[in-house]
Length: 255
Image (cartoon, rainbow, N blue to C red; front, side, top):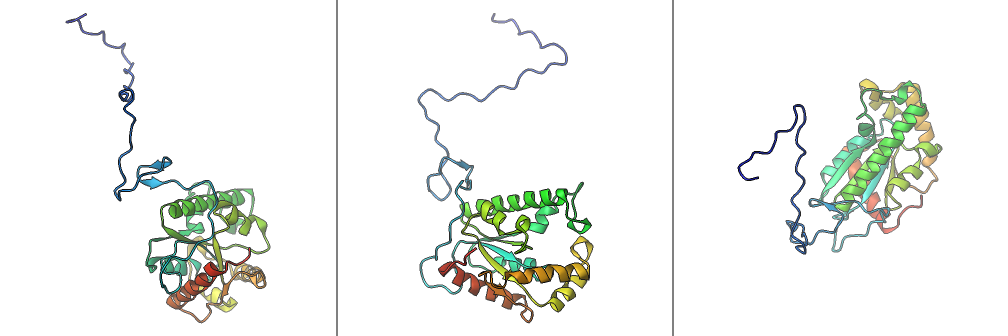
């Protein structure tokens, strides 16, 4: 009744949070316009498009004259043994493209796990395989998310030609056939020297480095483009990578 206060809730109870105010019938909620003036598709969150369910298709060359990959939006998988320079080259190439390009390192994503991190150096087991698969799937979603919003990406990972668990099949499944794989494979003496300069869990034993390098040689004859960067510095390797990718866009390698 007017003038009579509503009874207070019993001690210890909090009134329920009021729900959203319903819109008037027939008003039809219209999402705010995109800053660029274009209409947002229904599967957006804010102004960020969600990646489509379909796998990433092969990139198409951007119109107009351009050197190397130019302004083409693409997804790259940079493969190589420990000490090949994958992360350094990927970061350098991504930072110097004329269009927005992201770098995703699988090792970095794996190490997001702190307590319970399954370090492969302690032996490959069920836990390390599960964490690897989870990191690969996370990288794949991130790549598709970037591409859905017009941002190219380059992922680096030590993918083995003779080991399906850490092979190309998982990347093809999580990203799509449009992913362009390129192998960095310098000489064994080079990767041993680079590995010796590392610290922490990224530094491997010489025996393990030699074993990984030997298995990576299986990429020869696979049809994938291979760059021997034994005598190339980072800028020159990144330039070679861009040239190789430009050819791969025109004629995608079989994988």
